[in-house]
Length: 289
Image 1 (cartoon, rainbow, N blue to C red):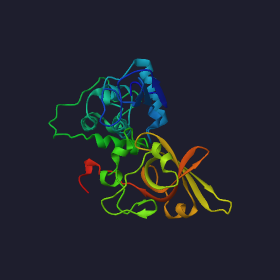
Image 2 (tube, rainbow, N blue to C red):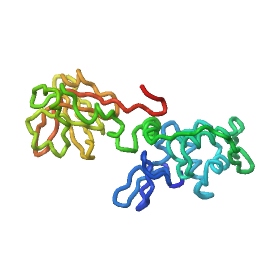
Image 3 (spheres, helix red, strand yellow):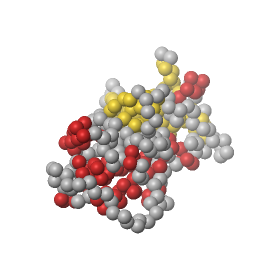
Image 4 (tube, rainbow, N blue to C red):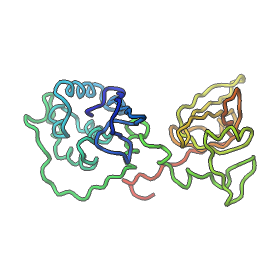
């Protein structure tokens, strides 16, 4: 909130990270490489009104950083649903309060329909002393909020898949074009291990970066995929018409792909034979499945 712009901002140094399980002293940074931090802009939050983003940034430029939720509600007329989005996106982590605590504060502070262009109150109000039940906050829930509000998680997406399904292929997965026996399950190979496996059938894990559909000379649909593996390396795939028809992609997520490693002009790619989207872990806010 206090360091984000409209789209993206690069800061040369800073310890703040937004991803789940990381320090919560500042809300808007998504990654930190070699001392630099990228702060996601407020406009990246889905359904957050553009006019409201401009108003927040204008107010911050004129009168300085926001000191907390009461100060924010006093200075900017926020509809309750928009304020809730800012909290769930992690934009108020600088307050040191958890999301459940902030959502309770919002319920106690927000004037509802009384919000005007001049703000809710003449003076800054603080939440009344209220005895609340123990409020639990799970790092995993941050990732689900980010998936909903940003369209992608800010943590390692491979941490979100079911461990049993995501880290090891099933016993029926193929290697060397033959089913493997139970107890001899092959682990997925990394992108860096593709060259030694040229011509072999392997299994790989990938988080979708982009899938480009196209047509063959006879008009059949096929596609090319680009993925990131668990080590953070990029790799490519080709889905020919028969595979494209049988195994369509179902949105962004982590997939397990089986196919033959091929090489052309020094670049390896996977000619896919089968695709499976791995399920996310259960959101701890909603209990066990």
